[in-house]
Length: 341
Image 1 (cartoon, one colour):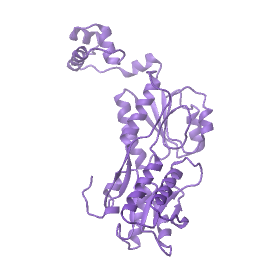
Image 2: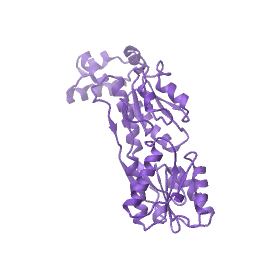
Image 3: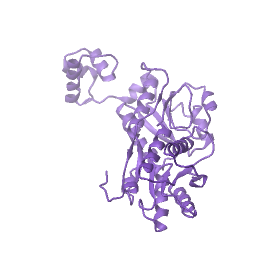
Image 4: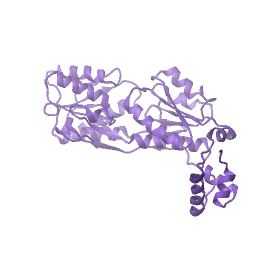
């Protein structure tokens, strides 16, 4: 039997309009009345017809999350939080892997999917601020990450300078003096790689440690193999580092592999720290010390901001949000063994 709003109204002893307001969240309803309606919904087993609701509103009920690396555990874990939040708000979230390709990013930014989506959560790495500003479509857009700044769209990104400063400061507190950085990248001074490098340099300066070009290694990409190759290069130096700060956890895990292959001990000979707190780091040998962005918060907030724009809810002007992060110490800097958390 198909349960209608009228059935719920009769069971709860309220008007049809009240039931509609509770189901659709349109107007404030007294808590006692709302609970009475919800009880009737539960008893009758009512479930809303989301397709019909979206059809009436002229929306598709689909939002897109476009990321540069679907196989990167950081993005996969963030996407999980976004998918759960979208489902809770009555939307289907679809993934789009751009692979950092400029043409693909540009097509998405300019609305190539606007007929089949209500809004876009976007982590661009190749297009420019000017290209985003030239965007003429009205499809709501929320930016995540450090690819583009200073545009009239909601933007969510951690404070990379502060996060990397915290990582290096931790190594300094362990009396490490030759701290390397793996993952440097040329290009935009506000991309995450440069910001993390800047935090690294500032932390060295604050600790009174000299900066050495030889201890900074750029990488083609940000994966395990990049970390492995970079660490092998550092180990070949006349005076290798006694600690490594990696751009992300994947690079750090690759670096730890190279250290182990060379017969060096972690953290006795070389301490290692990354950023992202991917699940793999909790099970690596040794477990990986990391700076953990709140991925759950980022994913949920991005969806909430996008849905608010889609549904025309009262919201503030476009905002920049810096999600929290925390240092998680494990065996790669403090030794062990320690419990997996």
